[in-house]
Length: 151
Image (cartoon, rainbow, N blue to C red):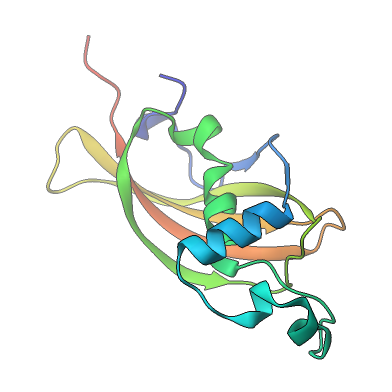
């Protein structure tokens, strides 16, 4: 497996993910319309020009998904049993079409699962940055992670 097992995670360990992604017009348009979000702030440039940002903003739920997606190849590819929840989700700065995003993750805590003996719960904070190193997202996440298989 490419991902880490429960035993591999160390509290306070910081992971700087190498994957980056420039957000495109197509990303924002498809995601926003696919999720039936009719907010003109994401779809209508003329409407958005009149607001404080002066242009459309990328759908924040797309940003959340991207920032949580970056860590998969480093941390959980094939070793997660699912997300248990998100908390303290914040978007301190807006994302615009053309921004290039990256992420870092820190292990906040971990504990063995009471329900599943072959799994543990790992709590992360994922932080997303744009090309100017501005924080665009901070996301708390709890994941149910596989324990290392016994030989």
